[in-house]
Image (cartoon, rainbow, N blue to C red; front, side, top):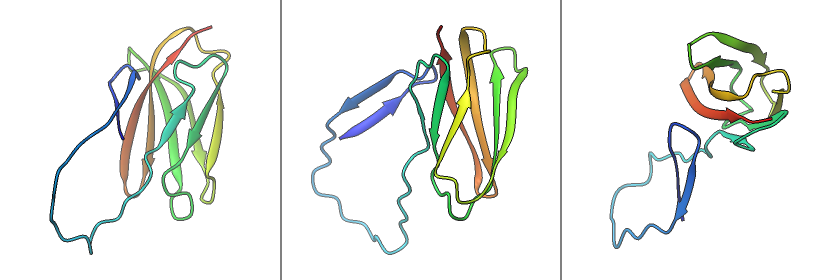
Length: 112
């Protein structure tokens, strides 16, 4: 099962058939993706973090004009983080998670 999400947060699940593939697997590390749900969100956005045991995250949420509407530090050892979106105006936003390992961006939609 493959899951694809576009820039607006729309998700599609589908079966992906690869046939026979052969490649070395000794250097592959599979981490679960960062999840932000529900999307669209009303008042509480739940974020499931990739690697909570080793990473401290900086969480930023910006609107479509690039203005920061929320930022906070998520300490190490947090697996689930809740962000209140109740005061956000309805619209499109970009959630950004920054850690030593890189930056990840997820599009979210706030609907009230």
